[in-house]
Image (tube, rainbow, N blue to C red):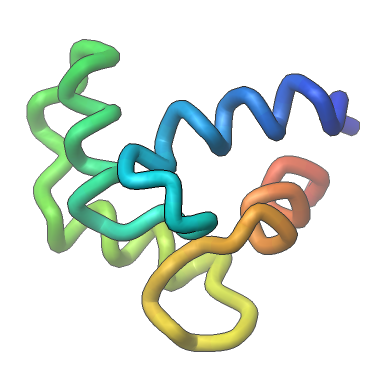
Length: 71
């Protein structure tokens, strides 16, 4: 199980515009910064969609937290 404080910090790193959600563009940008330039926006959207509980195409912190605790 992930630590909620660590998860909150990770979420904030991805939420570049501070709107409380992670978009595919934000995910792609952070992955590139972390050294993975092969994550396209299409791939990023697929990752988000896999954990997007409400179907809005973005990840909220609750959805992000839930994705960290699957297993």
